[in-house]
Image (cartoon, rainbow, N blue to C red):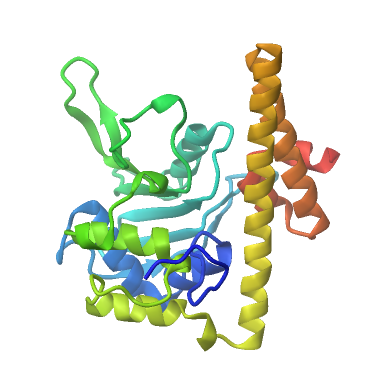
Length: 299
């Protein structure tokens, strides 16, 4: 049963606490394995095991920008996976994805002699927004991107893959779920609004998923951490939504695209200011807003 009221039995996976609780710790790595196999289309084969890697990947020299991932892991065949929960549209979102993917490529280079052999790198983006300008058809919510030849469309390089899931576009009901990917998309998108475990999600892996998501099982300290994470998430979403609305209204009133851009930029600065007031790290603010370190320090 899905409800839109304020009762919550299960955590919100779009929060930092929720996402990392479910997919970002050793105890629940089987959940991440099942999720990745489903969205890759591997079924019951494919990824058998993973190990979590340091989510903070440093640059090569002092003062270099570091990449901070939600989840960073390596499979048994040495493929690297960056898994990110993206809460709202960001400036230069695609640029950021490319930049992040460069980190696990760069760190594969050993010291000394090397033949440039690279392992696979995957970036999986779970997006709580839709790509702007109707980039993809309304019914298309999973996108797999590789380097391709523009002449004949063949895959030029198959070791770098970006998979984006536009979650707002996934509107299937419980009765319409067919594949494991359907079930995972439904579970992630609707988790915090569910009052009970759906009948369609009776696979053993979802038993553990809902058990780990049940707020009543948490310690008082874990509940406080979750509530703080929810507050940050709601403040962020509300501020961005307000900025988008303000930018739209100003742009419509003035008849200029600049109004929309200014409204979005002002909203992002408001988010960064609130996050600084919460004493969050510069890295966390950079990740959430897309702002540079210098822009944040000037606030």
